Length: 171
Image (cartoon, rainbow, N blue to C red; front, side):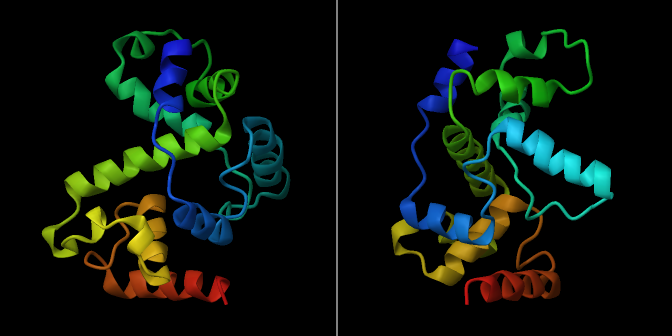
């Protein structure tokens, strides 16, 4: 776990304006622990049969597993007795890292993936310095990070609806 956590802890922090935008749009995502996620998020979903989880607490530590298991044979070969490997891993990595570092790691990985896979129509948008992005561009970047297939060139109408919904949260 120490070497896997080191990979997470060494990632470059995300720019302040991106963090501020993300926190404004999804206030329970960056600083939430796995414990809070488990009890508040899953508890609410189970007890109240609530499907909308967008505003419920979510920790990125469990998402680290999905990234690292693809690139680490030792991790991939670990036998997990249950079915919740990513949750167990999320709890374990919190002993060596923080939810904030896990968030940075996951988002940096998603941005790298976006740069490699999104259509050329995006131009230099994906490589633009966050500090030079407008609020609208930051909202779009947050949307891409949240759901990579959900972009302005794939489904313009759905993109615009979601974009306006998020933009109205900032007013």
